[in-house]
Image (cartoon, helix red, strand yellow):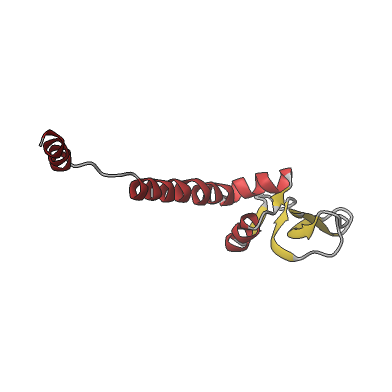
Length: 119
């Protein structure tokens, strides 16, 4: 399973983190598949850079973000975008499919059917 999680970098008192896509069986700081952003909690306004298109790709193929990464994605607005892509697109497709499969009954057809039965 692929996870989106933090990889610690930096020195002892100056950590920063890369947000990476990694196989869940790898170590915290082990080899990763792709770096999708970074997070520096030590700067006064914290620094957070996320490549939203790559994050949405990894979420789309089933990657699971860790709790901390999920909260960082919320701050960056990526989770809202992901939610909108998943649910608004699905509801639009569902309404289109339902509209195509539901038979449309017009009053004139009903009248024509009843006339044929009476004859």
